[in-house]
Length: 357
Ligand code: SF4
Figure 1 (cartoon, rainbow, N blue to C red):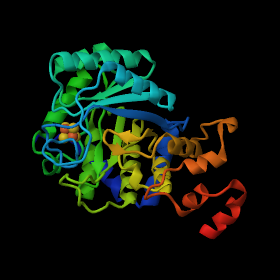
Figure 2: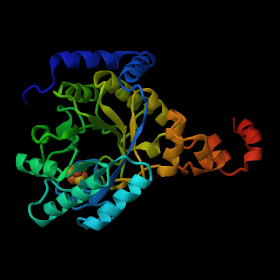
Figure 3: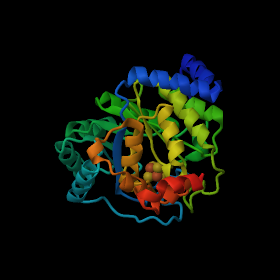
Figure 4: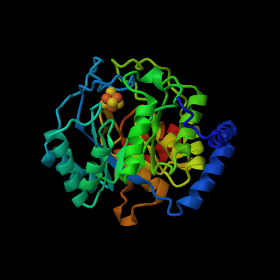
């Protein structure tokens, strides 16, 4: 493969990955404050508009037809159902709505036309609209742009070197060609990766170096933590240290100063505190709702509290401390203090916190 990572960027990002974590986070926080003075956290929603039966073999994905997984498959949703979900997402605080379909590439004819209609309608609701539909040619990219699509998501997932260990039905270069069609059509690029697929630190570094080498750099970079779904080849992978996720985000923030870094799949495996650290390290968006395509998310109520703690986004009148704490979902990452508080009346909480500690 021709070298698609700029040598200067590779050297810079490599240096970032070698920094002590505390120093790296401090550097990232400086870059973040300079480039995102409002310090907001954008909330987005992603709806699977066509689930399962995908011919591709991405080893992490429960939607591949090659793996026996327990997901609810469905054909392409009708437009009114997509629009209803977009309205729900907007009401839940999302300003960006993304539609994902499990295709190698969008089919021609009625189904593609239906997606174009859905894009027009969601755009008309005042939401930023994004789609992820697989590989595109120039003509499809132009049609999506003309329908009002703002952003196209097409993740490269990992470094060019590790790509064939994760996916064999397409090449890294195929992804790069689609990204180029998206740019030519005048859309923004959303392109990111997944941590925890068995890749080395060098692969994580080269993923970020690749994204940094893109000219212009992607406006949006989702960073996912592998969700190990039973039935997929990566189901038994070893857990990755959440601090490696934090390191990747901090390096990405330094190298991609104006990019929205999106904390994406895998948040259910992270404590609330680890998620908070990701925002300290430079993430400034999260996927909200109950699901990210087919894997679970903490939910709107949990996100209300987390985003408010990090940004002070809600007014005092909107805050209800009793409701806030009890809304945290029961999940592996919930802290002992959260669990205790969730079951107790406000008056008893001070004593409970002391006991829990
Ligand atoms: S990640 Fe996308 S392309 Fe790969 S198997 Fe899943 S749905 Fe198909």
